[in-house]
Length: 346
Image (cartoon, rainbow, N blue to C red; front, side, top):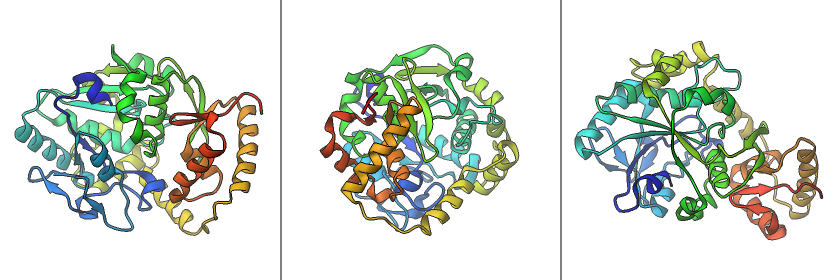
């Protein structure tokens, strides 16, 4: 979406990205590496692309092959298992092989601009690792923050002084080419980014914890930020510059931030694995929805995500699409793509 908005669609970008879909899609904690896939294609010595016919090896899961099938961009796999130094090697090889005109580092939400001690921070590891690697690269990298605050971590008020100029404000027209992807992709931050570009405003409840995220005029804005300032501020990114494996990165995260997000996933995965899978009962779901919406209205919530509803109803990740289909068929007027709208009165 951002690639087409900034650069047009004549030469789609190579997107270097994590295969880290969290537990709704991938029941295995942490990011996936090349060993977790079949069908990857070598791009450089250390970098492989994820084509549409690639397959995650069970029990792992990944949205990347489907993204590759539906979007024109080339998706290349970040392998974080060799720490920041390994990611620098991947970036250096890509620069040498592709000779790009530009490199953009994109974060949706803005937690890449964290110090590391903010009490609302939930997932600093992946962003800090990418920031550290980009800062070690001998090639200019532009840091972009889309939808400040939309990841439910650092509020936009905290981020405002850390942001530079607006590079772009997304509109409904920018969202149109990826509309079909938003119908199934589980990213809550991207869903809210697209929804605010389409004009949604209010408060959206996300994640298993039900975090309220404001949907404001800042939502569709894409800001530039200073890469060196971000590194100087981000204690975790500075600490992991010389790391050679993911275990070292995790340990630094525990010491600096007080936790590792992969530890949280390990604990949650263990708990989810012990829970029985409930059958999707349409009548019971509609009853739960009425109760959920009544409580959400009392909290001042106007929107929510299908991930939030899935977890609030005690359903498994593989039932998310079935739940979505049921709700859209029963109350299509409440679908404000790709979010679920909670009307102000029943």
